[in-house]
Every structure is written in C-alpha cells, then in structure tokens.
Length: 506
Image (cartoon, rainbow, N blue to C red; front, side, top):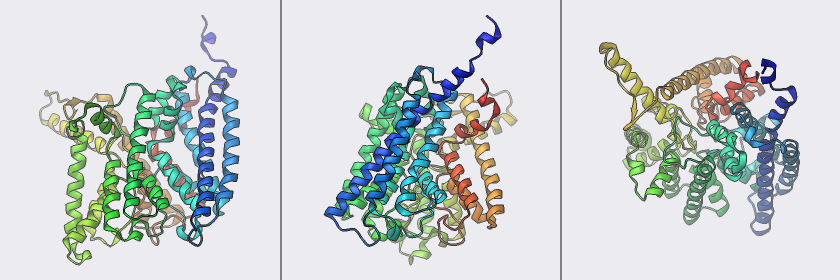
C-alpha cells in the first residue's frame, strides 16, 4: 500500500471537522432551552410576585434569545448529525471542547445584548465570566439594570459552567463514543480524579447528580434562613458552582445575616473538594475515602491556617472582636480558596501581610476535580514533593525517590504535566500582566490582579483602581480577559494546542 493511500482525502478531513458541529449544536440547542426556561420563570414571577424597580419584565427578550439560539443549535446539529461518533479522534474532541465553550459564550451573551442592551463585547465578557465561573463583571448596577429572568440566566450559566457543559453533554448523550473520553479529560480540572466509575458517561452523570443534590440542599437552607425563594435559588447556583455572581450589588453582605454567611461559606468549602471523593464516600459508606486523601488533608490544613491568620491579622479592622473577625475570616477564606468571589468584607483594607497571605490562597485555589479555580492543591503538593526529591538527589544522587501522593506513586509523566502546567501558567500570567499594563496604562499591581482573577477564574481582582469590576477597561482588554478566562477554565492545553501548526496537519 502506498503512502498516498494512507492519507485522508480532503472530503474525509472536512467530514471529520464537520462532525464537531453535532456536539456543538446539541449544546447550543440545550442553551436555547435553558434560556427559554428562564424566560418562562420570568413571566410566572411577574404574574405572582411583583419585582423590585428595575427588575420587572425581561421575559420577552429572553424568549427572542432562546428562539435564535435554538435555531442555530438545530442547524448545527442537522449539519453534523451524519458524522459517526466512533470516528471522533482526540484532536477532533479537543477542537470540539474549544468550539463548545466558544459557542456557549457567544450564545450565552445573547440575553444580555437583547435583554439589557449591553454591547456585544460586554455581553460576551459577562457570559464567559459566568460560564467559566470567574465571577468578574462589567455590570455596575445589578439591582437597577438586570431583570429577574436575566438574573436567573446569569446565575444559571455559572451553574452549568461549574461542573462543565462538556461533562453535562457527555452525561446526557453517552453515545458520543471514544470522543467522549477525550472531551471529558479536556475539560475536567486537575491532574487526577479518584473514586469515580470507569465509564466516562457514568462518571459524568454521577458528578452532576452530586452537584445538583448539593445545590438543592443549599437552596432549601437559604430559603429557611429567610432569603427570598428566587434569590435562594440564584445564590445556590452561584455558590455550588463557586462562581460568585449575586443578585445584589453588595453581594452576600447585602443580606446582613451571619447565618447566611456561614451557610454559604460552608457550601463554598464543600464545592472546593474533589467530587470524586464524595462519590467514593457514598459508594463505600465511609468517610475514609475523603479523610485519607492527601489532597483533602492539605486542603483542610491550608484553610485552617488561613482562617487563623486572617482572624488574628484583622482584629484591628474588626474592633478587636475575635468572633466578628473569625466570621469574616471564615467567609473570606471560603470565597477565596474556592475562587467564588462573594464579598462580605473589604479585603483591600487588610494589613499587607494578611493581604499577601490571601493572594497566596488565590494562587493555590481548590482541589482537583472540584468546581474551584486556581493552580489546584494537588499540583502544589506534587511540585513540592518533586522539589524535595530533587534536593535530596543533589547530595544523594544514587538514591531513587518516587514521588507519592499519599500512598499512591505518581507516574513521571504526571509530574511532568504538572511542571509544564505551572510553567505555562506563570508565563501566561507574566505576559498578560505586561500586555494589560501596556494597553490599559494601569499600574502593575492592577494588571496583576486583573490577570490573576481571569487565569485562576477567581472572581475578586485585587488592586483595582476603582470598583472591583472590569467596566472601565477598553474593548481589547476585555477580549484578552475573555481569552484568559477560557484558558484558565480549560487549563491552558486545550486552547493552546489549537495555536500549534502541527495540530491542523493530518
């Protein structure tokens, strides 16, 4: 057989990429249905419960957006439906993941354009910030400019993005074949996920069942704490997704309720833990699956240490009231390590050593396999252990040391992947800081805060010159921030691989 016979014909290549339209079309069609549900809820709420001034109406605008989104999704699905899923390669699955997130961001922005009159760039920023659970915003008057259907949509996109729209797609449509495995791994954060079923579709469905159960429990508890039912649902969505969008300009502080603050903080901590550990505990009927995990123990230690540092470091800013200081410290550590971004305290008023500790927590982020952002505790542990092994090897070169996570040996290729991730993360952060500072002419600390919040999908952006939002930045800076948020959510390699020329060669 000649070399020419091994090559794929131009038509087969087009057919392979055309097959990507099928999963993208299904996701866009699903978004159209979700927008429609928000529209219906808006109509019903307007009938049974008067809205606050500025939040009435909006249902018709979302109805129009749902029709447009649904038609585009249907057209994409019909165009790609003849492609056999068994032929989806890893390269095509990678492209599908990127295309799904890009399409979700674009069509998720339609309600903001039609319903709130936002510019396309601002609407795209808000949509991508929601889907990636970053929580950064360009809206300066949430209570006065967002109708209830839009507030619900703004919360729902964070919930959908928290566990992952690709994970949801694989769970609902398990017949995607081998491509499902590659798509799942292209989106789920972290270097590993323990305790889950071997089948990707079953894993996806298990993750979503746990995620939905926690969300429902939180909504019920918030309602029991006298939060409005609508706002209880919205905040349950954005808490369990560790996204941080709120229905109030003052965020959780607007409710002035320590009980609500503690409840939200506890569920933010819950959302920061690897969901695979929860499944392992349910399957075995024992919490040892959680407590014996090395990453979980490190997570508990980091949280406890940070809470102690913030409690005693901020005593002066809280009238030397230890209980009050602990309350704000507990919430602040929860919202920071989970990358949620809800606010109850002005962290920029903290003493500089305490603020530095908080920024370190922002870098670290949550556990692998959780909805939290950041570098991930698992990676920090692996890099620390690898550094220790290298130091020992320096003066004892003949001793072979195996890097372990708990009792489990870690393959060298996983350690190499972690090192590559950290290098790419830091290089991207550095380049982003320089570009942001150059384009927007802002001080380096401000540029650092903006890029950190985008790459780590973090929510709060320290060192802003004015309000903690992106409304004042120009179009290019917002577009670059959108790209950075997607890079961080898909953990760099999925998107960066598309920039490599060899990716497009057959």
